[in-house]
Every structure is written in C-alpha cells, then in structure tokens.
Amino acid sequence: MTGSRIVALGHYQPAQVLTNDDLAAMVDTSDEWITSRVGIKTRHVGGPGEPVDEMAAHAAAKALAAAGLQAGDIDLVLVATSTAIDRSPSMSARVAARLGMGSPAVMDINVVCSGFTHALATADHAIRAGAATRALVIGADKMADIADWTDRTTCVLLGDGAGAAVVVAEPEGTTAPGIGPVLWGSVPEMGNAVRIEGTPPRFAQEGQSVYRWATTTLPPIARQVCEKAGVAPEELGAVVLHQANLRIIEPVARKIGAVNAVVARDVVDSGNTSAASIPMALSKLVERGEVDSGALALLFGFGGNLSYAGQVVRCP
Image (cartoon, rainbow, N blue to C red):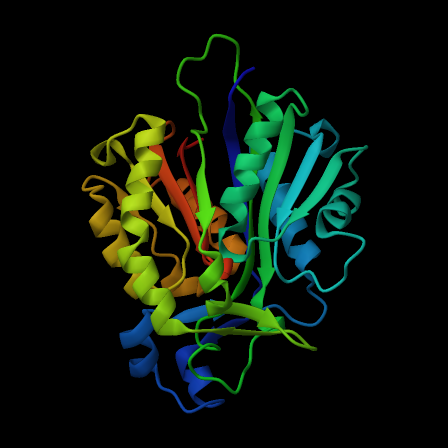
C-alpha cells in the first residue's frame, strides 16, 4: 500500500457575474443586507448552454495541463456534484468523453457541499488499494439551476463553478503522505436542514440550524482531522473550508486555532458553489502564490445531509 498526493489543480467559473445590486432588482434585498449576513459580494452563474459537465471538463483540462499529463493517463474519474439532473450518463462519464479519455473508471459522488472531500478520500483509498494510479477528482455544481430566485434568504448564497485535482500515487519511500487520513461522518436526524427536493428540484435550508451546527460542532471535528494527520493547527499553511457563508467560515477557522494559516475566503467573490467550493478556493490560493508548494492545508467540507469530511493535504 502507498499513499497519494495532489500534483495539480484547476478551476473554472462562468463569465456571467451576478452582483448584489443585480439581485436587489430581482428580490427584496440589498447589498448591505447580503454583505452583513453572509459576506458575499458577487457570484458567477452559468447560462443554459453551460452544463455541469462542461464546467467540470474545463477545470479538469486546466489541472491536467498543470500536471503535465494527458487525458489518457487517468484511470479514475470522480465527480462530486448534487446538480446532475440526468441519472445517466453520469457527469464523470460525460467529462471522460469530453476529454477523450481511454477507459477510466467513472463515478459520481453526491454528498452535496462536502462532496469534494469525500471524493478526494475515495480517490486516495482507491490508490492505496492498488485500484487506481492516477485519478481526476472534480467538484462541480450549477446551483443557479436549482435556486429559488424568489427566496431572498437562499438565492443570494448560490453560485456556479468547478474545481479539479489530479491525484497520483506517492513515490516509493515517501514518509509523509500528501493526502492525510479522512475524518468523515454525518448527523442523519438533522439531514433535512439542507434540501434539494421537488420537481423541478429547488434548494432550501434551515439557515439558523445549519449556522449553529457549523459554528459549534464542527471546530472540534476539524481539529480531530489535524490530529489524525499528526499535524498541529499551528503548522497549517492554509485552511480551506466549504465556502458556505463568510459568517460561518471566519468563526470556524478561528476556533480551529490555525493562527499561521491563510484562510480561504473565495465565498466573497464566488458565493456558495457547493461541491466546487473547496477545490476552486484551493486552486486559486495556489495559482496566486498565497500558499507555498508543500505547505499543509486543511480541507474541510460540510453541509447537505449535515455531513462532513476533512483531510490535511500538501499543496502542489
């Protein structure tokens, strides 16, 4: 058995930007109301001809190019998404087809906002078990398609995008794994607090319940993720939480105790992009040089199903 590591990242967002002032023309809200409650200024939204798999393929192609790999080098494709309307073909199969891959294993993973960290752990496990050697792990969601644009408490949160990571087996003899052990779980009895239901499907949530759970229950769990990796919070170079809401991100990050870490705040410009939020935020930090290659980053997803998953990774 061997470990795995992230060797490259990529991200993609639609060109159309929806500002708070734009939303104020659609529903009873204002820039001040949105900023004070969730910290979001803008979000990107895809048009009718920009499906989930297209966004995912753009992010994946960027990650592959950064890794110096061809599409045919990948033997496992995992796409974390909760906005795949069709049951088949899966988003992962469609991405593989768009990129012209050979015969990879393809699988979609729907754990909503914590989908990417679940998918990253799954890729790590597959590589450790010898079932894969090079994996493409993607988080992609088109939340605009499931938004209730008449509900000012939820539509102001949501944005579209995709983020991707290329994950490969660690070289022989590596002592510190590039992807640490996952800590994951859920609160089934509170799963109804975040919903994507109905025909057509619409996003809804019990905002106060989610806020209380996230800000009180999750910080100790995030510290346990660090403990499983054998890393003190002070050693972290970055903290990348699910980009749900700035009023959740900031207190959770503070309670983790990662005093030397850069805290991802991509939610301000991108909104809540569900499974895309963590890989997209991490990709931007790396691209801008805000974290060094080899720096330790805590990735921690949470949300739908009231599920969570986190691991410590080394930045590419």
